[in-house]
Image (cartoon, rainbow, N blue to C red; front, side, top):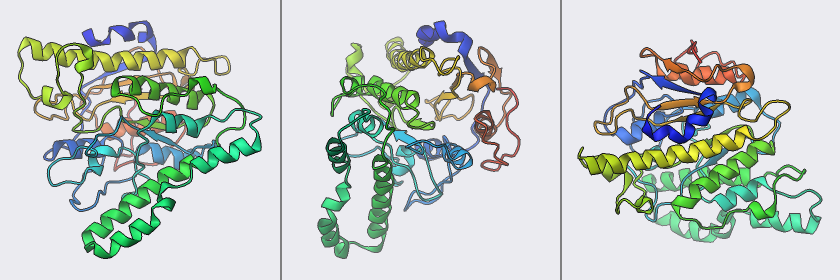
Length: 366
């Protein structure tokens, strides 16, 4: 652990850090390739429409078919006013989607902590009329814009028509999750609901609280969370060290003030992770804590952002996997493939996949 991990120290016995874990998929465009490969281990080549491969979370979901109201949950950061960031000439979907149901069907993340909360929480004994009203609120926004879409499509070229169809299909996938009835038993309370619109600084802990609630309620057992998108450039002036944006800062030199500001960002993220892990560790889950029974992977698609290196990735594994993991160690991966670790995490969740992304041997040291 480094100076940014101070808040994780109380949970050190339940966390493992990696050393010399490498991502072999690299090259330009660095952010598109790195983010797209984060849970898929797959290269990219299609510059017209995002195309990767099935991600490990969806491979796990297909193997386990968990009996939960939400098959898998996908959440993300506060939206960017101009849309998700993208590498020049490449679709922004590569930078925004880490969960993929198929090579061409991403699972777009929810960018509202309130919407995510509403997809999880329904109090027990809810009046049928109230429940119906909640479900109506989740009706497809696309249903209200079909006429507009129909008027636009005749004016689009083939490439734009394909992009529109891809976008609408992806949004439908999100909405189908929202329209699934959450658990009937009460878990949490309306007072836990976050505001509809939050700044990034409060959105992040609110979303982590929703994830913890979803796991505690057994509304879902598989969650992906993009705390920021690849190529992300959120403004961290709220840390009180000047007005700076994350991506810009990572390429702004190595003077002491720049390094201090960058460390402050990493520390802020790690503090949020520490709070989340502590929340899971305080929840009884049948004689063990929810953290003890979970597999929590936290990482980045890059090791050193300055040269966009995929070598020696920053990666952390927390939880006990109900006995499948041996936490509290520094894991020397010895240059092992990143895909082998993703496969090993599937095995830790009893999803005994034959192979994943060309890797058939799971990493043996988790």
